[in-house]
Image (cartoon, rainbow, N blue to C red):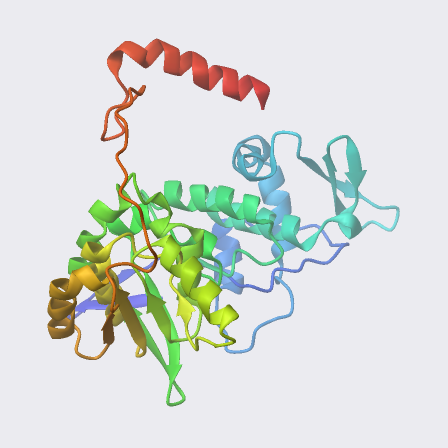
Length: 359
């Protein structure tokens, strides 16, 4: 791929594309392709997708020559008890034999998720710095726990490479990375045309404080990330109890809400602006925000800033009755901001060691 910079000046973009169809034949012939050989022979970005990963078996033998280094990557996802070797059949063809938890399988017994992780780790394995790695649907057939571990790898490699992930999984949306500069792009079909929407830097910066909110850590959790893979028509409420009570009331009255709630609320009326900006940047057309009755001033500001969306204020000050409460002061091993207290440092180290030893 060549990108035009200035007149008569070009630079090459070193990229590797891993398609979503990553099936590999159970039996394969021997070959010796390094990363450059594989890219030059297979990375043609053809319009017709193959039903399998073409010629990846040629890469397997080259990776086997660097198995010690490759295993440092793949075992971070599949665990240290995962072992693999390339074996030869009587017919002369080859297959992969893998062992986990003391049980061995040949290629036929290798699940699609394991194959997928193998090819993903291979895509990252010898990727040079400043290169681009594109991975389509890394979540296919992969357990959520392993998706989390893959995401950790992506974040690490993205420090020195451009990692592009096309996904339908909330496990591959990481807000800390987004706040630190990663792009979140939503692709939708509008009038038979695919359109891309990307969050602005203004929106990105507004989520730094939300990310560090100790009182509402669930605001940017997995349930919240699921909203990016839903259709339009999203309902924003202040907190988790709003979601619970609205669902309870509508069920009892045999009513139906047409939209989907965003996670467990936005974490308070003061954060509603940031989330409305997010959905506007990402091209959502139908958004309803519901605020408590004592937040009418906030609602008026939101109506001015986001005239395209519906802002509703409850007739009462809250979704449900609440008694006045006074929280007793308590002493912790961390201060109010979540920073550990120096006098408890050794205790915390022992605590973590005790937890880890039990696991």
